[in-house]
Length: 333
Image (cartoon, rainbow, N blue to C red; front, side, top):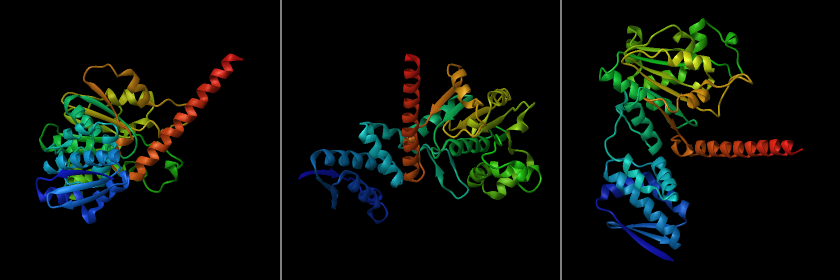
């Protein structure tokens, strides 16, 4: 049985580290099969030498975050564990400090929670056009909306425009009740939710009435030049190359564009190429355009979402490998 001691400078950091009902510490204990005990200003970690060492590194990384005022939860702990497994726990220091994007209507600060998210936020701040590609739950749209609201509050832009293609995924628009707006609203609901969270329902309605905020299907963008605006194209994997080009060329002076999408969830009819996939290839070396790619490690939803994303990635890799092997055998005949 190996033993290692980690010192704690302030008791409030220990409370933060342990979490509600010691849930953070229990998670580390399960992950590394160790026992952790708080004695005064020290945490004693016992178990196999290698596992104890890894657990101690996770604890040290989390204590560093706690010392910077971060409230620790399951997501922080699992992210620290993943970084320690790669020997990259030192990068966690990049997330410490006051990098608040904006405050929600309920007073909650919005900050990047992973290194991938931080790179994404910095890319949006430093470039005119940013394309964020990655799986569900990585905060692509939510962070973009937060940055748009922050820019609007600081009077850097006059309008927030958020759009997405109304691509049917198993249900026809014509089958839905109501007028055109009622038909497209279900496709735009996630965007409304993010804006409600940032601004509150009343403020959102007021700004929308004034024309400061616009949430509309992508087809409504055609023929316009959008100036002094923060423009977000969500679910961009469901655009055609023609739609993507049309959208990107709406850019006017004083505006920013953020394009988000997940290339593993394309709902276009078979045979249609995704505009997002093409844009990533065409624009990868264009100045003032940055492309940020998220991985399953950047997922900040329920832990099971991360596992689902990883399982699908593994499945697609196996399928791709089989297809390539099949082609190779065919060529040898």
